[in-house]
Image (cartoon, rainbow over all chains, first blue to last red; front, side):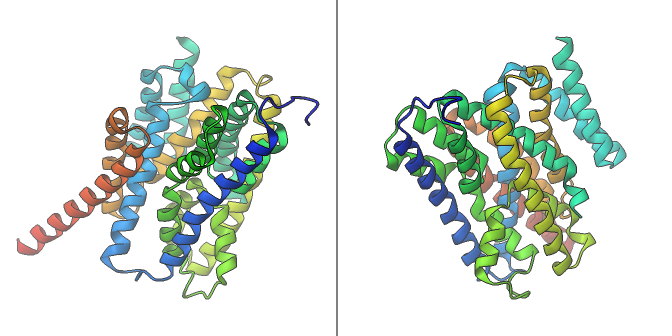
Length: 115
Length: 228
């Protein structure tokens, strides 16, 4: 693979960075598994952790939509929000995930192709 | 059960195509791109790592940038541990860790969405099948993004990448408990508002503020109902 696209970066440096990134992520998972075995499942602490997890996951996804990196940044905020709102709207009225997702993606696809 | 993973798997695969393209732009080779997906398995952390590497950041900075970006893993693992009743099922610790390693946000959100349909042991089987499928698509997507990003028209690719955040937000807003739904709305609104001020700290802040606000609202509401 090296012949196809020679890396401009020092390979040793990048591999060490990958190992560090793996360690940094593994530590959270390890800590989570250790704590998870100790926190009472029906207590208020678990309730709070769940809500923070839901809020954080929603925050990350909204961040991808409002401040995208990479190719999604070539679309406008209006296009992305129109897609999201279409999906949420259909979800509220039909309670059907499939239709909601189809509407959201459809509106976004049309918006990006038309403008 | 693997059937259920089709749409989310393709969506995540598309997200990882985006990651593969970013990795290539930054100057990683194909092996590095795929190895990072396998070893880290948390896209925001991988992007943080690549960004740091592309500017030649020192190792300490790389470590903390990735740790920050992937901090949500802590909460997701604690929450997943509870949903799967790992302790009651007496799952060996190394097996828990292996499953948690390939647990993406997608898997955790999906698990919360379907948990009522299955008993804990069935849910565990579902999650194993789901997570493995997601993992295969994530690795394939990374490689595809690295080698074929130029081949896929950008008009198609950006629609593909749009699927994951919208799909997950739709699943999240359908959470069974009212408190979790409130947390989704609060976190989803807070995060973009806080981002211009706090950068990537906004995710942590929005999570803490949104989760705490939701819990307080639920408690207030429950208290009112008891009084009345």
